[in-house]
Image 1 (spheres, rainbow, N blue to C red):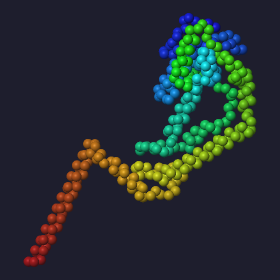
Image 2: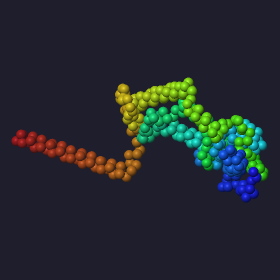
Image 3: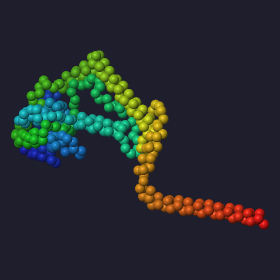
Length: 315
């Protein structure tokens, strides 16, 4: 299928890359699908951002083999220059996992706010022990994106230039060309395979459950050891973190006094930082002077009474 002359080369910084979708039994006509590419520029750059391409509007049946074949052999480049392909759902999962690891860490927390650490949060992190998948391949939603990581920046730029050259040709590359028999088929075959995978082998299922429970037990024991340490070690203010299980032994008084002295030393130099502190300090000084004056008056009064009594006894 030929590309229309009115197809733009770029849209909002994205290179438009037409693809020919092969006919299917359910839709026996060829169609054109438009893929959009640009260098990856995430809001928070990582080590691989400078050598990555961002793909938008990928086909719903995209796989890693599809993307690697399209950006290598089908545009006239050698294979082996693509390091990884990260689809939208996978990228979000990686970010969520990293965020959980930072947010629930029981060590190294600074400041007065103590974060709550739940056992549920730790259990949710067990990603290595999962049940067998019931689908032989993943499908994407319409408009999904992907990030293609190349081995170096030069390979990424070469692939982007090759895409622009390929676009100038009248006949676009065919999506999935050369992958026949290498990826699971769609249609009724997909659902027949799903029905079969829904009932996995007993040994495989038992292995997944045992792996999960072993990981669960290990993390539960690690969490208990962490809670035990928190129950014994006071924080910088001298307080003990309250955790489940109660406190085994009271903390050493010397450790608490040492932390209290450190906290008091940190507060030096901030006595008159605010205006109300200066005002309260002056009031305290005034009260202290009045109390001393009244004490001195009482002392003089007693001395006079004692002296008058002494004179009366002499006369």
